Structure formats: structure tokens, C-alpha cells
Length: 107
Picture 1: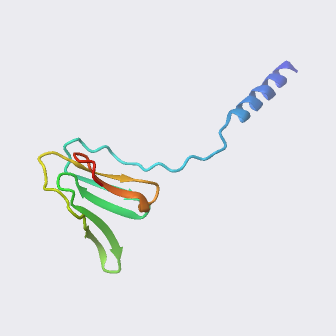
Picture 2: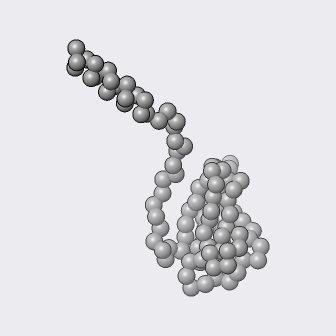
Picture 3: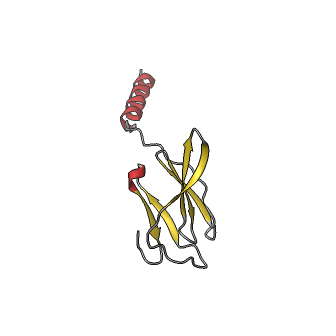
């Protein structure tokens, strides 16, 4: 009887301790070396290729003609430096994707 009661209490404690919320999927990627020149960022169904030195940003286009990279206009992009200075900051959807100049803080 005490074993049965102990098992019931253990099962109830375990069930109550479970978090019923399902976490959102986490994007999987490798960590680029600090000196890496290029980086691919995906947010929603938008894929961006970034040159971390120059800030040149290309968006992947998939259509009937195939897959190609199209330049994203970046107004007043500064001259390239000798070290990586740009990064892409994203939110959960592509509407919140920003090119950040890590030296000046401009987006």
C-alpha cells in the first residue's frame, strides 16, 4: 500500500512540475569565427548574406528563374574597414531585421 501511495505521489509531483508551454523553435547555426568575412542570416522566409567588413547585403531570391542573390540597398554605407564591423540583428519575423554598424551604432 505504501509503495502504491509513494508512486502516486511521485507521479503527481512530476506531472505538476511539467511546464505545459511549448518553447518556440530555436534557429540552429554555427558560430562564425570573429574574423569571418561573410555570414548568412535567416529570419522567417528571408535569407540574407552579409559581408561583415563592407556591410554589403544580399537577399536570396527563389523563383521560377532559380535561386539568385539580389543586392539590398543600404544608404550611406561607410567605407569598408580592416575588421568586421557589421552585423544583422533580427526579431522573430523578417519585419524586424536591421543592419547594424557596430562601430557607429547606426542602423
